[in-house]
Length: 272
Length: 282
Image 1 (tube, one colour):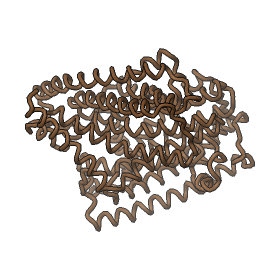
Image 2 (image 1 turned 30 degrees about the vertical axis):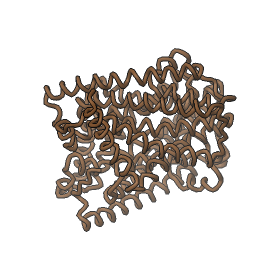
Image 3 (image 1 turned 180 degrees about the vertical axis):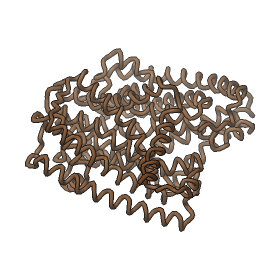
Image 4 (image 1 turned 90 degrees about the vertical axis):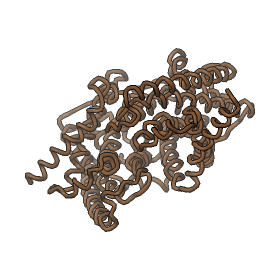
């Protein structure tokens, strides 16, 4: 890759990330919708555990899971379905005829989404922890930060892969995004330790980066209470492998789907 | 009356087409089953990790039934409140619907009925799954059937009132219109004792639960379906079925009056501000 190509990629990425980061500062109502509402949903799960008289560490599991839902929703609706929305609003052909690479646009969407959602998730964790008195006992802060970053890398890699697949879908995209919410909350163990699914189901669900990421972060934050699906080291290695696989697959899928969409004339269609 | 019925029927048919014709029947069936089953399995796994799979405990039936029937709340509130936004933002036909000689509220309720139908499928599948997989102890009886039917009619009327009121709010809102229905349904899930008794909430939040028709609806439905085995938390332990239904009836009426009243007000404001055919692109 030439120097010019790298610079163009980075400029494209920053340009696409910019509106996502700046947009949320210009519109503070996101605090109500993106923090207040997930916190209400998360609180319901906290009260279920309270009603069942569960150990207090489970409240921390739920708060962490509730915060990570922000990332999954962002990946689903603002990464995977984004090219579909861009097609609907007429921006997609402009992206394609611009000189910047499409991977740069996807990377910018991911970077902007990651930064904006990290802020939202942090507020959810902070508010939830204060409201419900959650106590964390991080055994290894560096490993925790590393796991979190690797989880995001793998997760947004998956989002970039899904974005290219969504490119050729029409009205199904909305429904499929909708469909991928609760089943993923279930398979990734957002509100309970993923071991409860059984080893083999949990292992299969580990193809979703959030499964491994959440399990590893719970083990690192609540070492006394969390019994993980795999040891933390294995889960970190798994996340690193998933990151590479998803990013590579996203690059190939994007090229293939763009060609297919061009050939079948789906880049500008609006199918409602 | 004929216009009202025709509008309801046509709007319900249109809503059903929009809900279901985006894919083939097989995928639509998967879509209709996967979400509610996944949602209820999350609760079951939470229950398993704490209660070690004691599905005979009355708390399990309380939680399972509350969650299953709550599917209606999301379906009806979101279904009715999003109609105007879908018609305005996606299809661009809202202005035509306003110039047509039909009562707008009937059209909204009719479209919402399609979601009610998909909600009924999801509730039925969830209940069947509960009975077959976890031995959910349903005890239907003749007396219980009467309470159940009355509770369902009153509960639906209350939800229709809330949904129409929310539709008015979405007509005036410029941002976040897509999430208003889901947001309110999510908030009510916390306060109406759907999956845990109101006593678990902090005392200052409990009055919110007592002020919601859904709280009385869910309690009535549980009692009707579980019979004497219904786990009676102290919240409504001293209440008879008639008292619960009476409270539910009063709140349903209030919900209809306030919901339809607010919709009329919002519609007037939207006309004044030219918001009927506004496309926010948000």
